[in-house]
Image 1 (cartoon, each protein chain N blue to C red):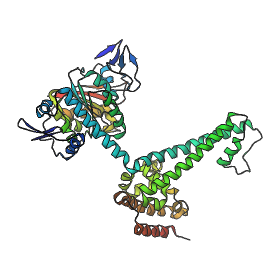
Image 2 (image 1 turned 180 degrees about the vertical axis):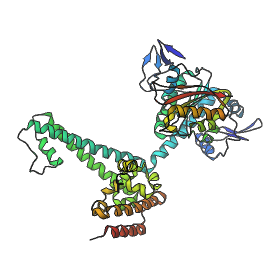
Image 3 (image 1 turned 90 degrees about the vertical axis):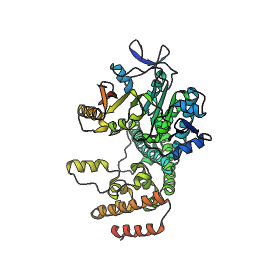
Image 4 (image 1 turned 180 degrees about the horizontal axis):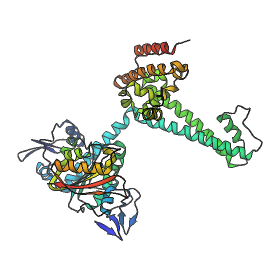
Length: 285
Length: 200
């Protein structure tokens, strides 16, 4: 017997599949066929089966079914909780780059307009700089600086949102390294599912791909940390133990990602043990 | 195939992806489409109005939309959700495009939807492209044509493209196919070749 989308065909006799598009689609998901015994269908069988009138009708029905199935599958894919998070993290990182570039350019422009101005001996951060430039009302520069400032505050809002989302998507990873770093790890891995399947050694150097490949190619020292450097336990650790802390943290993150992906909820017992272990190697003083 | 002043075109409703129009026909740019490049290099088989086609690796449906202008129907298989969104949009406007969201390496996923087709066109970025050809052969009519757009860099980034082409041709010949031509698609597409095959 051959199973097709419109029904089952055996020895010239056809049993039509019943129901609407949804039912046809569900039935397709349950079909178990093998390529060895498969015979391509002929649309005339579908007509004989009584599911359609002619070739045009046959294609219309098949097309409607396939579009329906694809749409369902696409929305199921996008509804995975981490898919939108990926876009948000990438947007956040692009915004960082853009805001820095724009601020630098605006500063250069401001210096040209104010020959007497210098940043030396004055601690003027990017934020302060923007608020100074903003006062230059006589040129388009002033209002541009205002826009850059607005962009920067949008960035902060997005960062909070990323962090909140990461807490929900990956509660254990977020508890270990904070939502933002967790989100960056997920983004770099390409999703929580992918992160959960990475070995700890890879998690340790996620985001340090350039250094890693240079190391593999020409024997420079291996990178000890990538994105996880952004976690305070790693960058606050003294140089001598930093690699060790990074290694332990990555190992715990690997486990955390698996709990997040396969169980999907916070595990206090795991977190407590993991934190203690990380504190141990970091050598709390 | 329709050529207007040496430019390959297809007859159909325009505005699919911002393509130029020429005397009410859609310009089919060999730089954007590997299949168009194959025709521009004088190879391939003409698309006829009675043909049904299986297109593996349909992506955004750009090339598919041109193929659909020529033939009776196109089964367009694509795996990734993002391009599939565009492909569905193309299928809504072109009644002879059947968009199938499935993995070309697992033909069993879409076999219950398939009739035998006159031509298979395969354009997927996978290492085992010859294996995908063999897996999808059951959908091809006895006298049908299989056009493989071979991305040599997907098979092996470091290998010499000509070596990959020779190895693939040998592989296909050993599996019961006859490779009529292997056309390099330079200058339109780098390190690509189009293999036109039939059953022996």
